[in-house]
Image (cartoon, rainbow, N blue to C red; front, side):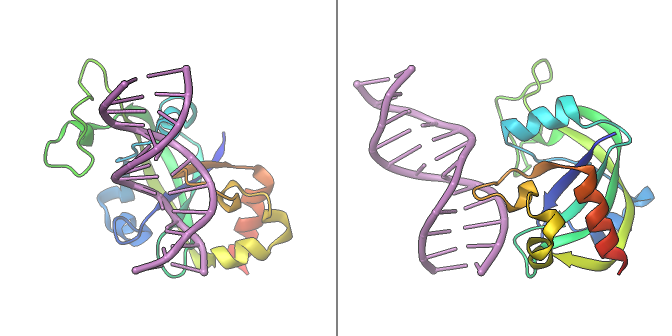
Length: 154
DNA sequence: GCCAACGTTGGC
DNA sequence: GCCAACGTTGGC
């Protein structure tokens, strides 16, 4: 299994929104970046785990953990003309965009702010910190995963 | 295929 | 609201 970091703007979809969902599951939809699409379609598998990262908010940071429960399948919001993520070039025969389903594993007892991630020696190489990185999904190493998990329990 | 213009992301 | 660092678009 692999580890990931999924970004979401809490004003759009937060970890608390997920916790209120029936069965605490949701489709991770709306991704419209080809690099991230490829990860959703080809690399992210059921059983993989991901940090739920809150972006574009104060403060940004990691709020908890989700588990992938369904592998990549066509993102139906691309064919919904009323969706903000509608893409007329995506069709049933040729789906352009993909999504996975996630389930809330846990909300951290303590929010891990970006500021704290930046200061932690074991987290300096996290892709989220790399200059210019804007991908909404990045991979996380086992060492990084463990370090953040430890922080969350302090 | 090049590249300028434009749009988006996301921390600050 | 600013702006760096992208990604996308479209004329040529």
